[in-house]
Length: 96
Image (tube, rainbow, N blue to C red; front, side, top):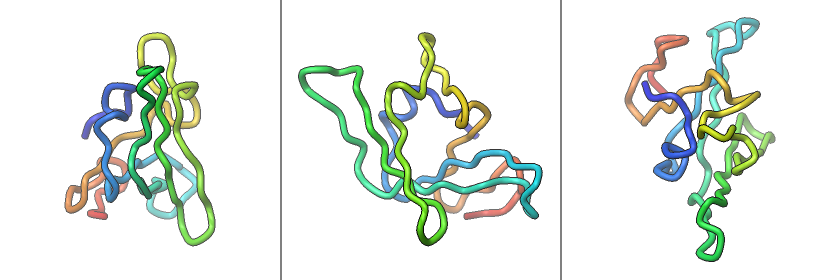
């Protein structure tokens, strides 16, 4: 599965999931679902906002500050991977 990078973040669509490794979880990963369209700005093409949802009540977003100068994701998304619907996760092996 592809790792989360700034380039990949521009290509996310609603329904994709971002899996983060969490050894303490029973299945070994935490799933954050892309809950809306990726927002970009015409006047500032490097800006991005990806809305995320986890569980029933947890919401967050990924923006351009979550990536380093090389475009790699930083904490907490450093080792995360993008999982499309019907594809298995490499951390837990489950299809989501």
